[in-house]
Length: 264
Image (cartoon, rainbow, N blue to C red; front, side, top):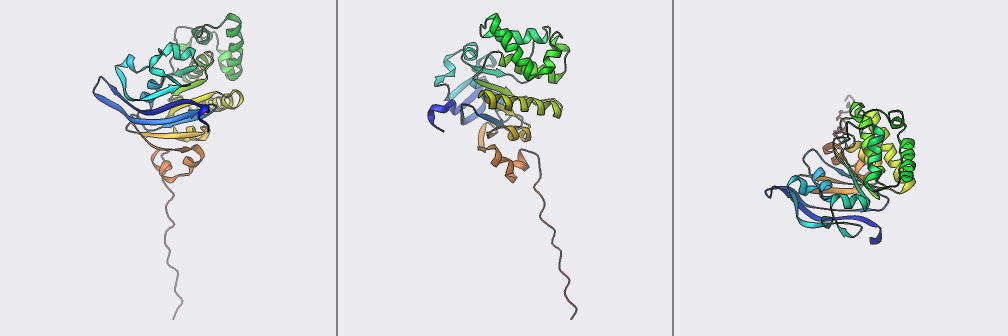
């Protein structure tokens, strides 16, 4: 794709915590407008650190980028606060279904619109769009978020992010701890948003099978290093990816059966 279509550019970033623990060793990738890109890898591979670096959240956890660069729409993300990045359209849904547990579902959603200083009319309009995407949230809109199911809380967290009208939605482990049918519904909704509105999505996932089904491209991280990247459809077919990242063993070779020799 042409350079002008690049929305996010991550170039050789290295990151440490507490000035001593190195979490990333030179991760690089680009994300184009209208694309779904998946970051794959086991727990501890560096996925969450990469996402927090992109949203400039590392300093809050005594982390820092020590080398490389991250550009969002050509802007160095380290020159902006996380709140400024949200207003610029880079919105992250953190791992763990973070909701305001003592607020209702609808109050949680409204907070996303308030974060970008939306007008009352804009917030009301966006609410209806979220309820159309996640009808379950409309049914539970008066319930306290902390008393709803894990799936409903994840939908709330995603819905609140969408209320900020992102250009790039960043998701950290959206499938974690959820029933397979709920995961399918969430990923189908994300793909629908991508197709219908052109929303760009960057997601980190341990559930590589579901991520590769819905992503356009993927990069595999291992111990803070990008070890593999390519089109999602191609990666799904590779035996090494199936074995190491999808948990599928390659099909065994057919057993050798000696043919009977004709009697002399």
